[in-house]
Length: 286
Image (cartoon, rainbow, N blue to C red):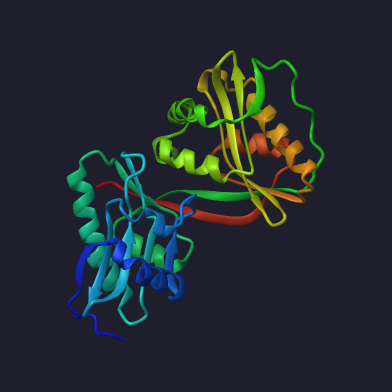
């Protein structure tokens, strides 16, 4: 292993680094990837996205571009076994943090560490554990019927709906969970099933789900605050499960916060059960 006192050069990633960066991500053991609609290489061109190199060899990389501008998720941290993980993190995080502070619009940096080694790095850098994300699963469980007295109708989402969905997202979710237009567009294009509840031209609810080898994953479900508590979320969820049933899906998963009682009640009503998987969410205020 290279000594901790190794002099590293930290610089922004560029297109010429793509192959070496791909090798670092795919062949090294210490790699954190955010649970994201975009692959780590798709964030090249957004800042901060930094690499640490020695003698023209890329030994580590960190990507945490704000998206939307108020929140910067750590999309990638990867380091070579030839360098101390602590050294790689300190060099890259300090540089990235300076860039984020200079942007001025970012209220927080967030991460969902799936491995203990990355969790320890975050805690050492004064990230604070805010809550947990849990995984629930539905396996063709019986469920009560959805109410037919809906304000509007459920239809397939279209690209022209993304602007309205983005506004709904801002109103329905806390700052850390809001999505930008560009992220929602990527999610829409990758979706197996994406629907909205259209009330005379107003989008008051939506969901975006992806396909999995055994069924599907509900990636996003939101309802405008003024319409919450009226069975709209359950109706959208029920319609989604019907569509997955028709596809022969045996299992549908969803993630939600462990302290989101409304979401937990909704998914329990539809027959979802906890899988036992649970991941911490860490936040840092620049």
